[in-house]
Image 1 (cartoon, helix red, strand yellow):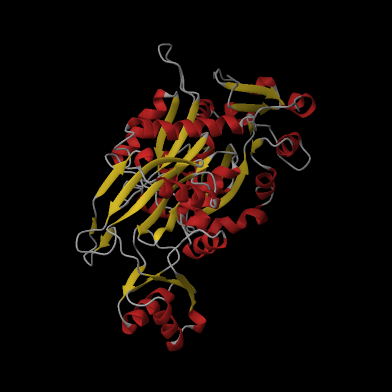
Image 2 (cartoon, helix red, strand yellow; image 1 turned 90 degrees about the vertical axis):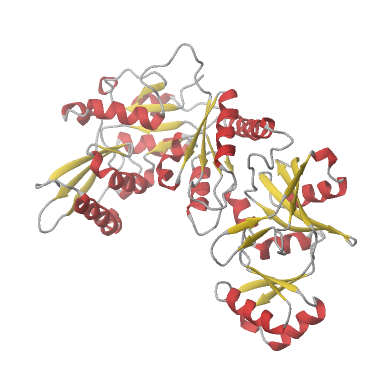
Length: 495
């Protein structure tokens, strides 16, 4: 198997370490002779001595980008740290982080000092959060930060460090530990077990009240990956800087456009990683206005829905809603999830109140006919193929699947999981058509069925996969099938 990382150095003598799993190239060889067809973008770690404009280090990153490789640092990174005036924008926030750290230290540094940051790791572990933030902004493998201590405590300079300085400054051990951590290369391999072929990150939030996958399901993903020679690691929001360490990213935290989940997806895609859920799917699924427009334009059946504009909402509009939708009706905020941001209005006063609450957060909202059913269908679709089928029952004494109570607690209804082939064919077929309008990722299509037919309610970009619910029929094969899809996408990205 080809190494996942290629290290570029000015001189072979600069490289002092024996680390299996890395390809070491001199800059002249990379610049002159190493442009050849390849199956996937190569991760280039540019450890040249200098990165100044038109230097060898500059050209290594420039040509890496021209060859569709993934260099660290990029040319943009090189320019950002070329002059203090270009990175000054980041200093106020970084200084705040640094001072917050100082305030927590029992014995803070008393004189000016240098903090080395190698692949996001701090030479002084007390400043690891500061190191992570600097590495997130300036993606240099080796960074030297001069910090002034005293009345005007602040970061004096942030500069790249050449590999030739590492040994001279007695940082060889720290360098080896840092690069092994970043590239996920152990100090020694166990001969009794074949090493993993793939590395997958699963983004999850252990504190989330209604996560897309519970803790048991997450561990089953890890187990399924291991059986396929895939190392699966559960990561959290603080691990944003580690995305390039992996071959793929699986979002198992509720997605939203205005939080870190969307940024994780965009960052992973920029690094050439397959992502489920991809950013386009998140963008399309999290807004019900977009989804309704998309489904309607393709003549797929949905409940009668009317978009409402805050700028022209008045009593005449409410009269129109009464005539077209009748009571009760449902008002929704476009980006609600798990039954949040949704009101059932039984009279004109409730329509006014619900609209006022929703318009406070969104220019557009949706009014929809109320369509009561004892249960909703959820069809899981992976890459265009049905994966699981569930009936989600309404919460007892409530009109929704999930009842969000005033005290903050939630009560979910019951469920019934069926084999896909045992679910009504017309329900599965409609779900598959609806998912195809969004993309080829993992979706949960919600549908209602009554005597008028089957209607698409919404499409979820990160559907629940919980142990004992969605996996009731397929059991471990459900997790294995999703892991196989990641392997297929990773392999395709290498072509």
